[in-house]
Image (cartoon, rainbow, N blue to C red; front, side, top):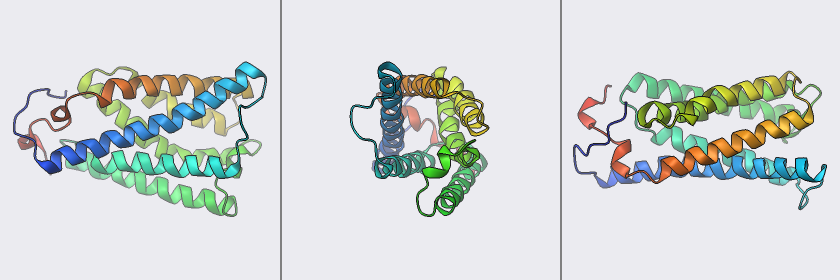
Length: 206
């Protein structure tokens, strides 16, 4: 479990890394929340959108999501070094999967995600796993129990979407639910005192 005691004064590096880690979570929540908002709008207005959603916007959101998750992956504080290295390897795999999406879409990584069925969505599982891992870590450390739900729900959603098992309304509704849950999780996390993420540095294992 995470420890909320302040064991050592925080160094400037401690503060910067915690802020970067939480910034990554907040940016991820903003992107997923925006996608959830668009999905909700489509459900509520029978496929009408408040503005034109272009491929350029979706590509920007996808790359921004990879960046924000990477920010959290590389600045997360984990007691077990092997676990941290494992998480980074999964993120490297996700970067390779993004390159594969770029190749499949001839430079547009979004178009393969809307195939019939959209099997290319399986390439999102590594990056979604990274985000789910972060949520589960926070759930374990600070009893943010929605983090456990996100850890199981997000990869499952991508899997069932990828095999074409989700009708459009179900897919949109699922994204709305994930967005609401992740924004709630983020609001509970990012306002915690900075030292919560550091804990007792003497307990860190190589």
